[in-house]
Length: 413
Ligand SMILES: Nc1ncnc2c1ncn2[C@@H]1O[C@H](COP(=O)(O)OP(=O)(O)OP(=O)(O)O)[C@@H](O)[C@H]1O
Image 1 (spheres, helix red, strand yellow):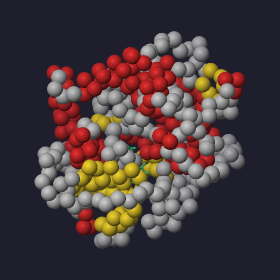
Image 2 (cartoon, rainbow, N blue to C red):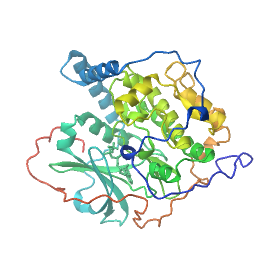
Image 3 (tube, protein in one colour):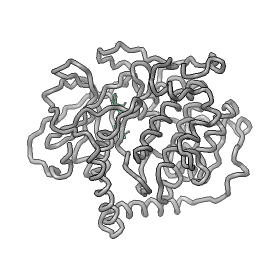
Image 4 (tube, rainbow, N blue to C red):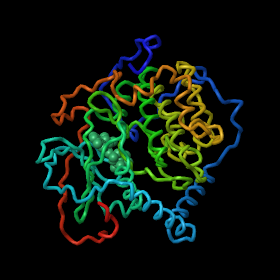
């Protein structure tokens, strides 16, 4: 048991419903009326309202900083190249192990901004894997070359029970391919939408596993930067695996890039201040909030308004929120970096020692040898895809051998 039986209440079952909208299809979330909410930080937060204009300027400033043709951009690129070299020395080589002919491509498991992920089966050992395919043209057009190379690099450096494993990479003239473990249980996002919200102990279980994964990444100076339930998968036993390292970055000190998913982005990222690992602890607080409430605290259908809320709005909790959870979330979702839990002298220890996690036996949790709150209903080892949505299958150009204008850009794949 990951929880002390004394404190383990019966509130661990999940009522599942059928329809699962994705984040972009969500209606405005049903936020309870004011009289059902109260404010933890009414007095604590200093009033400093940031306007839409200021946000617009901050975003432009971030784009300018990211451009490599300024002096600052060139210096940043030089530093990044150096850091990348240092990390390369620790990474597992991924290219040269596989090619397309080693696998049968089965169905699509998910799509993202830059490509899609397929279920595949090895022609050699009969096992199932997930194949992430990214189109070089789209990566270049969306200026994601560095992020894509970082995704491979970060995944080839990490090895952790709660992080998906990358087995190998290859490329053709149009696409790059990443072979990963197939995580059968689907996205935590789908489970959350089907359950509407998680009971306190269930949210605590997933949060605790995520906390250990973040602690591990930060110990390697990697910021994840895209924490959200869509990127947390459930394995066959119901333990988490974090996937999508598209925004993960090696950052021993600070960085600037504006990236992430609006609802989850930290205020210092929105206002393009230099930032560090602390942004993951903000997102961690948002994740706990979303698991307990069923919606994120700063949501708006207009992303700019979401940013404005992140910078200015007060954090409000529905009355049913557990007191300790409110306290932890308030300490994570705080704009004051010198007060944000996880970012203080004791780092992740402060988060793990917070009263909300009181019953968690961390040493036991990391072994995964414990009961999970939900076991995905799947047939193991069969390539069961019942936990994934259906996506229209398209004609693919995989294996293309024509001219490759981007040959120089993805040499490590
Ligand atoms: N290892 C895996 N096993 C099973 N399914 C996976 C795996 N990796 C990814 N998926 C599925 O594919 C979806 C898209 O993958 P991923 O998030 O890595 O792509 P992306 O293009 O970077 O997406 P985004 O635009 O959200 O950043 C995931 O949300 C998940 O449903």
